[in-house]
Amino acid sequence: MNKACFIDLQGTLGGNEFGDVRTFSFFSFSKEALERISSKDYLIFIITNQSRIGAGYYSLDEYEELIEKIHLEVPSVERILCCPHTRYDNCKCKKPKRGMIDQILIEYDIDLAESYVIGDMGKSDMNLAKEIGSKSVLVLTGAGKSSLEEYKHTWSEIEPTIIADNILEAVNKL
Image 1 (spheres, rainbow, N blue to C red):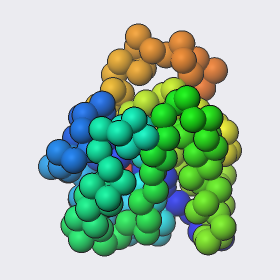
Image 2: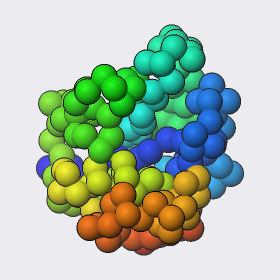
Image 3: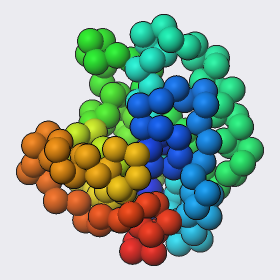
């Protein structure tokens, strides 16, 4: 079985956690972090909620253009999955629901107990880790600090496996 890192996009790898994904750019340390994760024999999957697609702010085609650029910049990423739904759509893929992970498990043999969910939002990322039985890493970039402080009540039953200033620091603790 493989081990994997399921990594949030905005706020974790770059960009603004609530910003427009079309303006996404990596933090200066993120590409190095992804390469280090890959060198530790983890499969890398980026999983992201993109409710602005479902709300009509931008199209799935515009989003996919960005994804193509990310794959060119960081070829070590196996797949990038997104939930385009709004919270009112009652889908099965919007984090913290496990739908995107279940899609990955159809194609890949992954040991979830030896894998990590890495993100900046406790409510979605840490709850997803609990839902799938994986380890969790909360990074303090993006919404990480506020998630740990003022919004901890939205995921109060969970203690992250690792808390790190950013994804590069987190990789050194895996």
